[in-house]
Amino acid sequence: MSNLPHPVVTETAYLTLHYRLASVAGEDIVSTFADNPATLQMGKGQLAPFLEACLIGLEEGVHQTFELPPERAFGPRNPELIRPVSRATLEQNSGPTEDYVIGDLVEFAAPGGGQFAGVLREIDNENAVFDFNHPLAGQSLQFEVKIIGIM
Image (tube, rainbow, N blue to C red):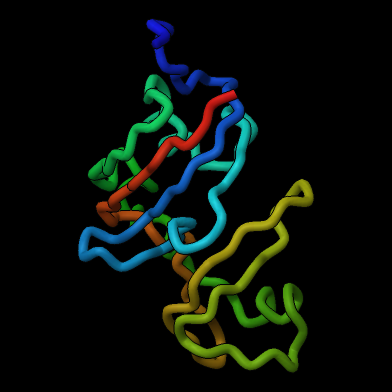
């Protein structure tokens, strides 16, 4: 029988785990529990930083669920991220033949070459209103993890 301590998750650990992100009502947003576990390296952006922060210091074999209020998850909703976009800008972004439906997630080219996305909330002949908040902003979440192995 070994007295060696169990390995723990560090900021650069390579690990195999099952994880599940769900609403507080228990609806899965993403889950690996029914499939193969995930293998990832901490600090490489494979999980959101706030999810990685939950894992630091957990021992191999641990199965734990974290309750994350919006402030510890994707943040509160920001009303300043609900913005009008002119139809002309929208057509430049996607083309004039695109049909938009309320609730569509539309990607825009950002200055400097990146991308950002917004959910269409309203549209008329002149303007469209997009919500550029993260879709999970303002929501409390459950983050369930089972650490299978740490290398």
